[in-house]
Length: 172
Image 1 (cartoon, rainbow, N blue to C red):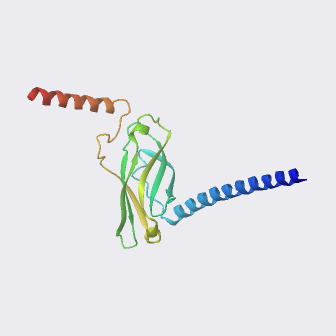
Image 2: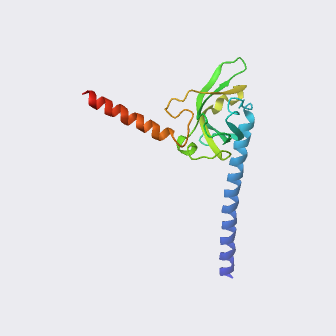
Image 3: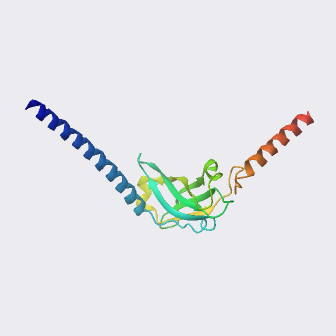
């Protein structure tokens, strides 16, 4: 009889743990969707020449400052990898201004039509109720990557570095 009670208690404990984990994951997913729903829909028109926008979301898992993610599919081989994202209030005052970027190391191997993910810092969580508009514009890439040509840009840039290094050494 004691063995049956112990097995029943173990089963009940496992069921309780599984339920708690499932509810936690579900509430987290629902919380993310509700945060995304509170923001105005982004204007992706600056990206649509280069990308098909699949999805976007906000992540405030740690509270405070969050992340903004965009999942997109490349429409062509050479694409910009940096965009400026601006969040504004009803009077047009900037509440957040960050760079949305797609990592070069993912982009160089991504095929046309393959989903890629870009990310940006998002405004503070407490500013969500104030945000009334969001714009995305192409940015000048602060790195040498710019509009990448996955087959050539990396090696061309290394060649430029080597040539610069050789010139500097020969001038000495």
